[in-house]
Amino acid sequence: MKFAVIVFPGSNCDRDMYHSVKHVLGMEADLVWYENSNLENYDAILLPGGFSYGDYLRSGAIASASNVMQQVKAHVDAGKPVLGVCNGFQILLEAGLLPGAMLPNENLSFMCHHEALAVANDATRFTTNFKKGEVIHLPIAHGEGNYFTDDETLSELKKNNQIVFAYENNPNGSAADIAGIINSEGNVLGMMPHPERAVEKLLGSDDGTRLFQSLIENWRDTYAVNA
Image 1 (tube, rainbow, N blue to C red):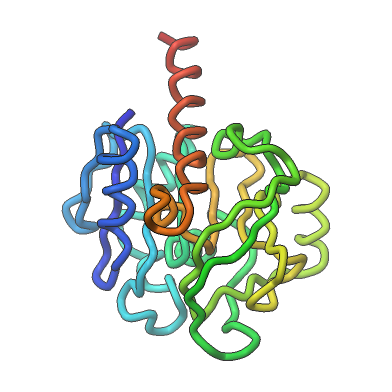
Image 2 (cartoon, rainbow, N blue to C red):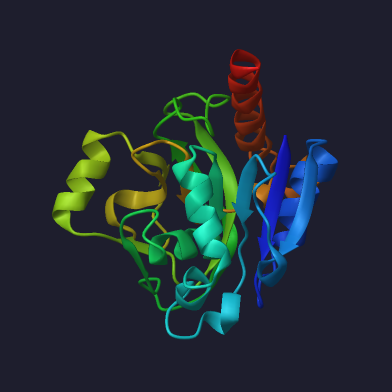
């Protein structure tokens, strides 16, 4: 399985993401500069955290309009997986690949610490190595992680089981304690906590490893069937 880690001006978690899939999981991976991108030969796309374009206008807004996102959308339309973490989640929202928007944290402060999350959906291609209701620990690092959407969309997310991770102790005011959601087709996951910063116990948790393992194992199963 080959991963593309998209790098925008201001990305600062790209190396963490690359290290996770390349050196911890042993997969092929490239850091792909957004201007020189050709994503046709990649099996999965990772949008890392950071402050793309300095978070001017709104977090992720400028990056969402970059040319590379047209390739990301084509990748999504082809049914291939995309994971957006923190700023990557914000970019997915701004690009319309996931519903909703991000507001500043309720306390109007940047927060950087570990959070307990409940696994709300263990049936996605990103979460089959977890158990529904299981509590895991991943770090957060954001100033605009307060997920918001209208009541109708929130009802649809709940009805369609698109809420994947929920905060145990909501740190930012997110609607329905949402920490991560998936699209209706099941191949785009956006989440504010950082699984790539929790792949080695030395870092305080290795719970994030199972997310990448789930994605890799499900890809292999699909590839084996289609081969």
